[in-house]
Image (cartoon, rainbow, N blue to C red):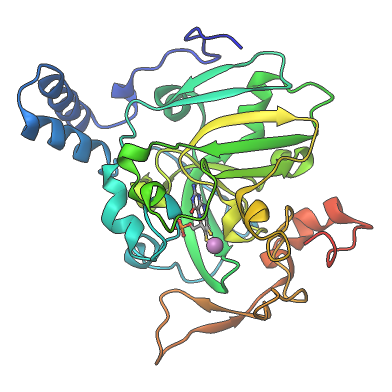
Length: 325
Ligand SMILES: Nc1nc2c(c(=O)[nH]1)N[C@H]1C(S)=C(S)[C@@H](COP(=O)(O)O)O[C@H]1N2
Ligand SMILES: [Mo]
């Protein structure tokens, strides 16, 4: 695979993406850090790249499946109750510890069965695609859920630029694995064989619902939500929605995924939301809509394919969904 900085996108300056003042300020911090202006400056520069920045985007059309008509989960709840095991297994760990992750610069390697393997830089991504806001339901396999205004672009647009071969049947994703910045990966109780990995079948990857996501609530993703780039596949359980992606490969075999490897009898490759197929240890018929509490559990019925059946059920025609869970 090519090691050059070849990129399929016209170079667009970061200054066109973030407000000039913010960008200049960040650059200056970085420069100060690079010049060895002291440990404080370096620390500030890092912290600064984890502060969400405003994004330019268009809203998904009203009345479309891309715009759920439900109450949004408050930003606070969506960004303090998280799963990101690289930073610990407690729901509050990502918000507490993910700021340690450096997300600028960021590089994503795209390869495998494609005609034009290469790399993307964060600037290419923020400047090279039209961003759209999509309001999606999100359902974790642990039976909690939320409704979030994500900002991103269809994964198909990214894949198309690298020209997948006709023999490419699946897409594999990998998360950054950087022990020095990810305290959860250094923990003795860590159970995952890092890096965190996920995968989709090619038709699922190309489905227009499948979103490469760079933001939420009008701004870039905070680190705990998977900055700078994560996958959102709204008809599948939360663990398919891999965070902080650094590698994407087109493959001819079904890729091994982290949760499937860990507990294959509990977590399958497909992981389609399905109220009729229970997890071995709990029912999937209902979910707790965040924010929920003991006194206000906000219990709602779980929908088949998380309510996106009209757009996705056709892909699974004839498949036994109890077997391919
Ligand atoms: N790299 C990585 N991605 C991940 C996870 C993780 O631990 N590591 N957890 C997954 C799980 S189980 C869920 S429910 C969602 C949670 O996304 P959220 O924190 O934005 O709600 O991220 C998914 N993506
Ligand atoms: Mo999850």
